[in-house]
Length: 187
Image 1 (tube, rainbow, N blue to C red):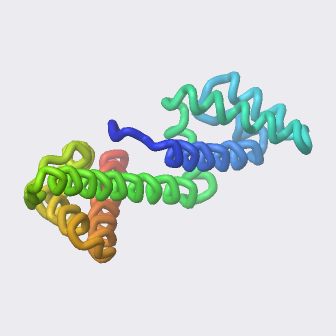
Image 2: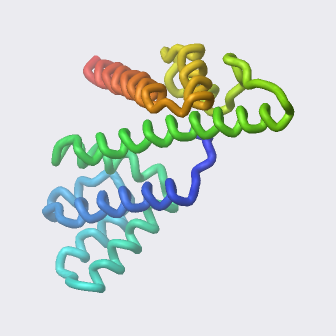
């Protein structure tokens, strides 16, 4: 997504990536050989199994840094781990992504409303939103008007039920997209 990422969100994503690397480092050597990543990362993961203590932590951070600098390697690794160990890592990553999108949308609505109030205006219900455009690009089946209206209502009232409803809609769209992708793989 092209939504600007805050420092705290970058830190959260880095922590999730560190958890993934930790999981990968515990895999048996035969599975490490079949990982969808570069030979350098596979070699580092193989060597790390015999390292203990602080040196292990440094190696894990180094591997995390390598993966962070090459984001194309990350998604295949999450999918690999989802197949091998269940979907909890992938689910957690997707959950955080949805929370981030929702928070970005709500923050944009609040910011737009504050700007409108500074100009002695009121934010319109069909306010222009860059985040909403990104959401529609990623999840075309989402009702743009409803999502914009819920964000607008949250900006006006700060009622958390609107925030929860946005999350529910985005989560459903994400699950629908995942289901469609699974169907494409089967065929």
